[in-house]
Length: 437
Picture 1 (cartoon, rainbow, N blue to C red):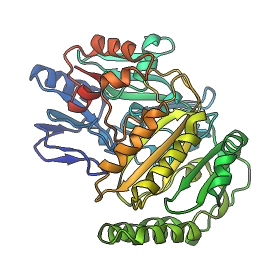
Picture 2 (picture 1 turned 45 degrees about the vertical axis):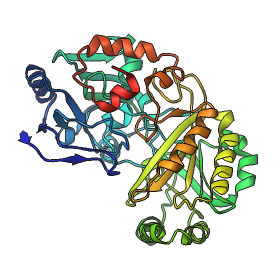
Picture 3 (picture 1 turned 90 degrees about the horizontal axis):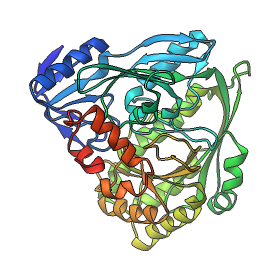
Picture 4 (picture 1 turned 90 degrees about the vertical axis):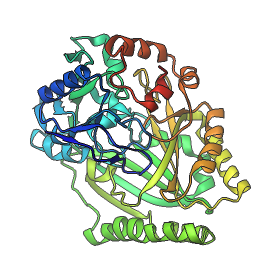
């Protein structure tokens, strides 16, 4: 289906565009036809998933290819643990699609509204020092190239391209199928609890090593960390999920409804922010439960925000965090959103933020109606000083020249781009900044 005009904006309201044409293909062949038509008309073309990137990475001034109708499971094999999905499939649909086969995704981030193609293309990740980002689960993919051809990439076909295609920023072609290496379905035992911030920082390496998944949040203007530790358990383990009412109070009433009102009020009266942050750590984050993996890993986020996240060598996380904390105090800012700290295993994907090193992540946020520029720019300077690489789907100021120095395989990726999209049919203003012309 094709329609003219109409504006598009991302979830965070930080990027928007009025494309010349919008198409909603329902099959890989429909994507192929759309690419061929765009090339014939000398128009750029970009695929859009759920719009959860904070940058302009998916902005499509020419043909906007909406993959909302390209969803579903193509095949699953319980023996190999591999499952193939249409590229527009939303992450929150995948658990139900895998359940009949006794499978689950190995790890997830804390939001599951994204499409699988968007999540892997921007380096979406969860937490856990022994687990990579979602793109590391990709074992095969099918891409429509700028020549309008199907390109199949796997361990047996065009295997040399897999480290680029699995996390390709949307710059190498339009993903139409993605094959994931899944694992047997499992449950997770979770404990969320407040802890003195200094204790968490002093023992952070031990906590990260001791649990399958560990992360913590820190509300500025407090001395408390909200620590989240999780252990993977066999699927047969008795589940003890959060009571429905308790979960609604924590995740809907407090974390979304009340929090939205406080964030809005803080724009008018910033002085309320520290008091609310201190109250928030008393009311939330103290619970223990056991549930299916996806129910533990993901949360509902209804309060709109802007985010910047940097990946650091794991050993640099504590000094970088302390520097950010000191920066907030020195500048006298009133920051309403918590800082989030997570971890991931080293991997070999060319543009992965965890390429070649065990990695920790520090993410900062602002309410979407607040101007994040001063805060984000100052924090970015700190994180760059500690060896940071920016998350591809979140706000940052780096350009291709700066990014090249932080990614050993950056030029190898550009060489693949030159091969698959020499005329930059899949480019846009944002990709010109981060990858160059």
